[in-house]
Amino acid sequence: MEILFYRYNSICEPDILQVFNNFGITVHTEEMEMTDKHITPKQCAVKITEWLTTHSLAFVFSVNFFPAISYTCNHFKVPYVCWSVDSPVPELFSNALKNEWNRIFLFDHAQHEFFRPLNPQHIFYLPLATNVKRWENVILNMTDGDFAKYDADVSFVGSLYTEKCRYDALNLSPYTQGFVDGLIEAQLKVYGHNFIPDNLNDRVIDEIASADPDFYEGSDTYGDTRRYLVAHQYIGMKLAAVERERTLNRLAKNFHVALYTHSDTSPLVGVDCRGGVSTLTEMPKVFHASKINLNMTMRPIETGLSLRVWDILGCGGFVLTNYQAEIPEYFEIGRELDTYESMEELEQKVHYYLSHEDERIEIAINGYEKTARYHTYESRLAEMIRILSGGNN
Image (cartoon, rainbow, N blue to C red; front, side, top):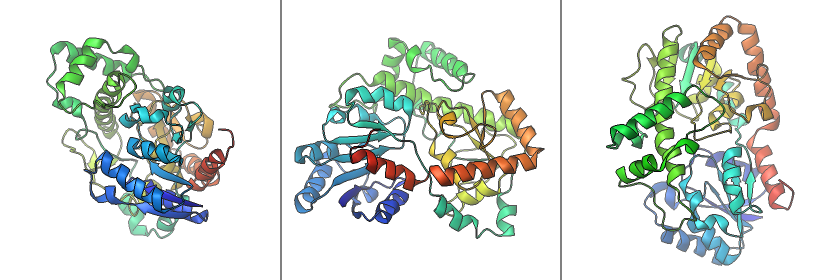
């Protein structure tokens, strides 16, 4: 089997590429977008056309959805396979989503149910995964110095979303600001269900969309994208920033909280801010050495498990995460990881697990063993190939 892997430098790409190679698939890579982020859809289509006219490809693959690739593959009647690893993905609103030769895999059940009716025979659900073998190569070589360096009661690795929050740059009316503030305060109290999209009114949507001159308005869309994007890309990002700042500040009052981020940490008080870490060489050491690894899922990921959860588990780390509806489908809460549904419960569980080391370690081991057995890229891509070969989803 011969395929083309269109790359843009997603963190997931090296692991997926390795597994395709391990499966005996001949993988060609197109990497122009890894170095030039201004590639136009036309340039992309021209390059894909060159590949399709000079090679006999079983399919073209990418992480996340590229409409230009979809249209080109549809013209040549070659399957276009993509695996969405983010949310939101505005490109999923392109009319290209409806193309017959698409084979689109989405990691979030809610995202899948939202988009699947547009192309029900060609949109599938596939959760994310991790590369346990890669993490093992780092963790097995950890030194006593590494364990001392990365030890903490609670660690969090990730963005504070302050630098990614486009909402903060908008000049909005007091009405809209108050409306959004109220929505955020209400949503912060509810875990496992995102009610923001259904509770936006047209006035708020119109004002936020109009306030950003760079608001995504695709010319090739099948419907009004504004409600979805306002809810997820603007308010969702703002909610993530508020939630992460408040959570870290609250925990730091009573526990040693280590934060690894490139974000501005000036709003934080008492948090041990340690800067960023290398994803491949340092992050697994953080996950393995920390007593508790905190995960705060962005609300635009409505039901699914973020990549961070899989990676912590794959490193043998203890995970304490906000509740997501899909977690019980894959893990036994309290045995392989644990969850919280309020700030009070989070604080209580941090205190409990810091004083019950044996139980905490046993849960981390159980989570690692489950992940290593069932939730690797090998298992996910084998399932993908099975579906592409005509198996039922």
